[in-house]
Image 1 (cartoon, rainbow, N blue to C red):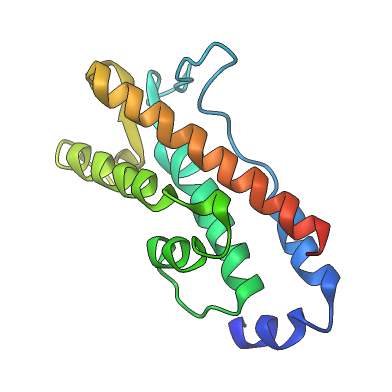
Image 2 (tube, helix red, strand yellow; image 1 turned 90 degrees about the horizontal axis):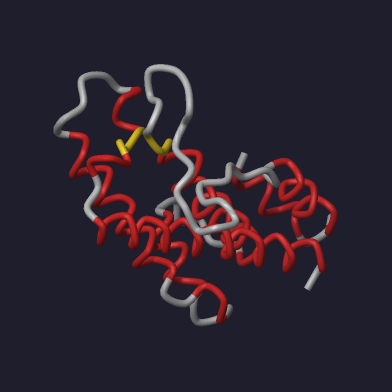
Length: 155
């Protein structure tokens, strides 16, 4: 599939735009006042869903940029680092993504099931962890928005 996309991306400018549109929705993790938005109901009430809120903006943006640049690498961090020299808005994003991975790892030891691993209980975070999490979420959102804008501009 990857080879097909790479072989058709140059001849079909709309393909990358369509891929961008397909993944255009990202979950909000921070409200207008800069507060974390944990789940309000269910078994994970009070927790942040790390995949939806934290990881997906980085993963989707790096995937779009990798396709645009013809990179076959599958590692999100390596993709980000590879394109950071070409796109100024990507600089320092790998460090934020790395923090999200480390935070999930820190909390995964306390989890019981596979689904639990994707949630971080906000009440168990220190003030510094909350600040860094907010920063990483904001940076991921910005990365995704700027990547989407670049892709849709056709540059």
